[in-house]
Length: 243
Image 1 (cartoon, helix red, strand yellow):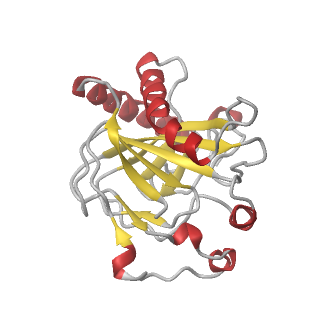
Image 2 (cartoon, helix red, strand yellow):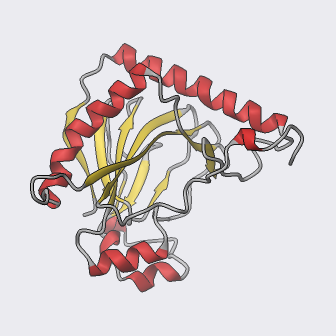
């Protein structure tokens, strides 16, 4: 169906996940402050840098400091749990794993964020190439830092949409998929949810809280790339008051 909540959870204490949530919130506030100093409203303006990108108003995707040991531990734990699934789907070639860790980030949705439009995380050409080659793949690994109940403020998936023909993704995606193919699964704090980069999904509204989710992107082989979700230029490449 293009996504799954795995049975295992990361082996981290709830207090560690709460501390990561605190650090992620602090990191995001710091990044937004730096954007404000460059003349842009960090809540109402769309932007994309190498460190942070808006995914919708009050929804951000941003990278944590690489020297944060607790963050590195979460990353290692998540990859250890999810990699066997991907290795089963894409066995090693001559004993060498074809999996490639592409990026790690945190997605935070804050109180007041509206429902997103249906979208996939990859460009149209990825859909075309993936339809021709079963090993041309990118996957998401999601680890919520808070409990997410079913049909609440989590992510809603359009089941099996990753298998739709590439032409489907070149036009306007319908707002109302078949009801029996829509699912917003529960996932506890520290749980692991994996999905195909091609699957259509959307974040549900955030009414009463901040929702942080760690995200790790895994590619198969050296040919796949994500050229639409991040920018090569950082915030500090632009002087104060630039925007």
